[in-house]
Image 1 (tube, rainbow, N blue to C red):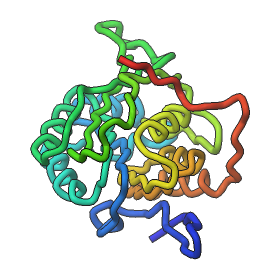
Image 2 (tube, rainbow, N blue to C red):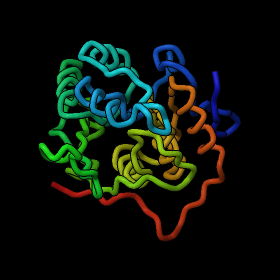
Image 3 (tube, rainbow, N blue to C red):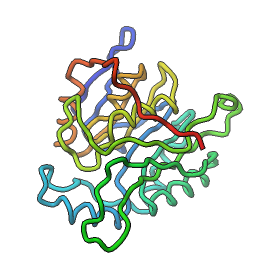
Image 4 (tube, helix red, strand yellow):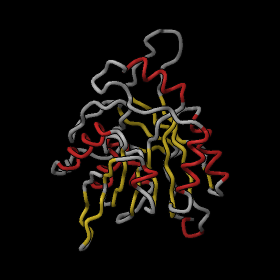
Length: 247
C-alpha cells in the first residue's frame, strides 16, 4: 500500500492509499464524503471513444451500475457523520439519489457544475455536455440544521492546471473542489474520497485545512496524485475557490 501522510498532533494519518476502497479504507470514518466516481456505461463509452489513444490511455475505470452504487452507499452510510457530495452523469446521479434516500439520508435537489469552456459536440448532432451533476445528501441530524445555505450550482473553467496537474481524463479543477470542500466541511474535519483519481480533492482539503483521506485503485493516477501531494503547497493571493451560486 502506498500512502502520503498528514501530521495531526503526534500521528501520521495516511491520506492517499493505493487500492480499491473496499480493501484499503476498511473501518475508516469521516465527517464528509466528497467523491467523483466513475459514471454510467453511457458516459464511459463516450469517454473511451475520445481518449483511448490519449496520454493517459483512456479513463482507466469500468463504468458503474446500480449495484455498485447501492453497495457503496450501504458500506459508507454508517461511517459518514454529515455530508455526502457525489459527482455523476444524468444516469448515475439518479442511482445515487435513490440509494442515499433508501439509506435514510436527506437528499437535496441535484446540483450542477457549469463547465466554462466546455468542448462542443464535435459530431455536430446534438448539444454539448456543458454540465456535470452533483448529488448532495446528509444525515437527518438536528445538529446540521441552521448551518447556512449552500450554493445551488457551481461554475468553473474546464481548464485544469497548476500544482502538478498532468492531464488526467475526468479530473476536476482545483478551484471547484476547494469551493465544494469549503461548503460541505468545516476546518479540521476529516473528508474521505474513495475515488481519489489524481488527488484534486485531497489537495483541496490540504489547502482549506481539512484532513483528506483517499484511495485510488489505478496505479498511474495514484502516482500522479502522490507527486502532486509531495509538492510544496503555495496559496496565491490571486487564486481562490470557484464561485458558488445560490439558487
